[in-house]
Image (cartoon, rainbow, N blue to C red; front, side, top):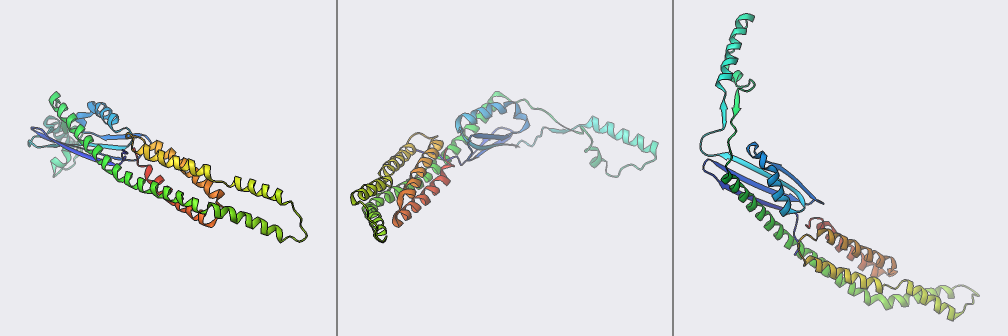
Length: 290
């Protein structure tokens, strides 16, 4: 069964002093295009997270976000008191030397000074990493489930379109004998309109047969039928067949175009146009298949 490249997954982990939320979303892309936004305290694990995602998602434009929310009331960001005190003393000294008034709002100035606020690097335990990896895996599971659901919708659309093209192909046979008779009649009538024109009727019959053989569409019908069956077989195979379905669409389009060029019949041309319309709708959506 086919799988879409579009998906979304989200999972939340509750730790003693923080809540970690992981979101993953994906759109269609020719290959895996992965970007991550991870809290700085987990940066050293980023490559591990990326490897997990790339192994399971294969293709698509994938964005992974990790949000960390402190729940204990404590924060790793601290005011650097000694640095602020040093800035305070320097400002007072320079105020006296330069005869400049002291600021009225000390803290708004001091807290903007370099290194006035420091972030303590917290040690991440192995248990916490294990929880995060489990949360990441759950988010990926959700995204894959979403992709499968979208894939089922695409499957139903494709099956309907392929069946429609097959039905139109069956209608071609209704016009083939009429088409041959019209060609013969048109050529014969054109010759009879030429005054004092004598021709070998046997030779004319041979030329008409040769001309009709050049316009024969049986091979195109047979190949097109096989391509339609192969498309359905591929959809019912293992996920990850999006590129192959795209190639089959190209072959289907080639046979439909040849049918159109050989049609030489108004009703057949209409059938070809309807086939092309159904195929274009498939080609638009097949780009989103994994």
